[in-house]
Amino acid sequence: GAVVSQHPSRVICKSGTSVKIECRSLDFQATTMFWYRQFPKQSLMLMATSNEGSKATYEQGVEKDKFLINHASLTLSTLTVTSAHPEDSSFYICSASQQGTYEQYFGPGTRLTVT
Amino acid sequence: GQNIDQPTEMTATEGAIVQINCTYQTSGFNGLFWYQQHAGEAPTFLSYNVLDGLEEKGRFSSFLSRSKGYSYLLLKELQMKDSASYLCAAYNYGQNFVFGPGTRLSVLP
Image 1 (cartoon, each protein chain N blue to C red):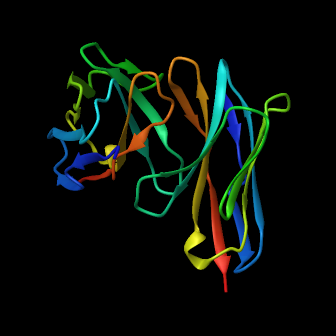
Image 2: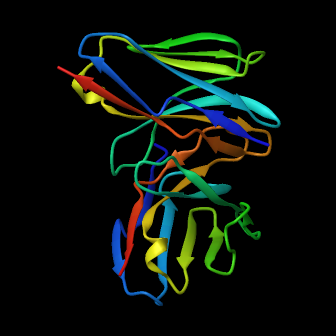
């Protein structure tokens, strides 16, 4: 149990375009979802925390107008990178947790390359 | 502020024992996670310590000292497949996770 999927696994887009990444909890209801970004040989950097039905809480330095997060249901959260630039190229990982539990379950990640 | 520190890289020999240390200073600390991450993949859960002491799980053990803000992950009988990054993460009240920089472990034959 506790499987989280992400789609797409890899995406290449042109500079200036927008990209949407989906994160789904397949067999449990995720009251909270987390979005991380990871640059090569670096650790995970939390971008934002989203609770179902409410606005996401962004970490300091993360532009909320550039990284749009929607958590419309208990099984789906989306991250949209708007007007992507080459410096947005990174590995984006989501994780999900259930209410009252401490563990977070990670998705397989999405490798974004902006050309 | 919140700060978590780990060694950047470690090297060990197959069959040996290695200890990866993690020190933390966070607000509202609740517990300490350890994750394993292979290159290009998402992290996988290894352990979670809330109370002081050592928790053993097969070849992997994790220790926590809340008073010292210190944890370590102990890997025994190292195998080549253990070559990966090991991330410690503090779990704070309010479901806030703060990850350390990660330790890249290389296991040599």
